[in-house]
Structures are given as C-alpha cells and as structure tokens.
Image 1 (cartoon, rainbow, N blue to C red):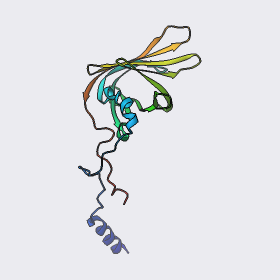
Image 2: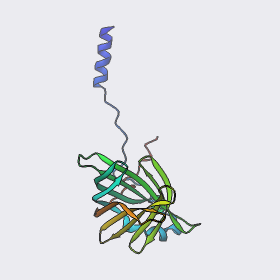
Image 3: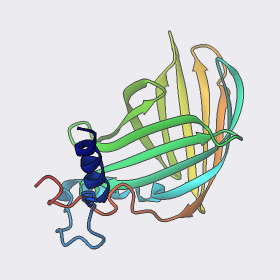
Image 4: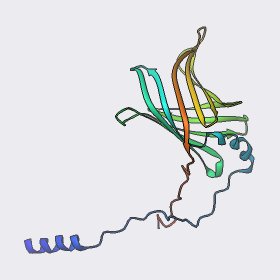
Length: 198
C-alpha cells in the first residue's frame, strides 16, 4: 500500500500541470462600437480619461486624514459608459479609500447619471458638467448634502467636497489635487479570449 502511494505521489510530481488559459496578447476580436446617439454626450467626458495621482485630505467621523489619491478613468461598451476607480493610499501603502463609479447619459432626462460605490455604500446621482469640470451631490442627512465640485484643466484635477446644510455656509471637508500621469486602456485592455469558456 505504501509503495503504491509513493508511486502515485511520484507520478503526480512528474506530471505536467495544466496551463492556465490566458487572454491572447493580440486578440483578433472586433472593436465594440458604441451607440451613435450617445457619442456626443459621452464624448464630453473625454477630459477625465487617463491615470491621475496626487494628494488628498479631508475629515470624516474618525477625524482628519491624508492620502495619496489615484484615479483611473476609461470608457467601456464602445464609449457608452465611462468608468472610474479611485484609491486613496495611506503612508504605509495600505488602501484607506476605494471607490468605483459608472457614468452614463440618460436620453429621457437629458442628464448624466453616476452610479457610485464606496466604503459599503452605493447610490445613483446626477452629475452636471460645468465649463471646466463637473458638480455632483450626495444626501448627507436631513436638509444637507455633500457637494463635490471638480475643476479639470491643464492636466490638473482639483476636487473639493463641501458639507452644505440648509441655512448654513458650505463647510469644506475634502480636497484632492491630482496631476494627469498617463493614458490608460483601462478598463478594456486585452479582452478575454472566447476560448476561455470552451
């Protein structure tokens, strides 16, 4: 019995392990075309595309914090949707903040919608373009909102978060100042091979 077990172990050790299926480096897949009616409104978000990084600081229920903020922004579904991942890194390189959002154009309301996920919370919010950036708001309790105002120009992205309560002056609780680092093919990159599931 012991000899049979040793033979089995030896056979397993010398057998060639199955190779994982990986996407082709140069896929021969067709380019995904976007919806023609969305090309114009979604094209207005092109200023956000790329990889961005820089300092961010704010205050939450735990107190003040500082992180190195990174953002990567790119189109998916042929440009019908713009996706964003934000990560804030502490000094020890641990992740102090992570968020994901998808921005799309609602043809019925003629407005941008942003579906946002962060720190266990999710919601759909209106995103309004300005002359050099955007503004969006999140409910923050009775008669109060968190308003985020971004200015994006000359390869710089500055965003300020303010707590705006009815009857009171806006109180700044967040600021990030990012520089554009590079282009990115995220989130499309190399598509998964159709052979993956066959």
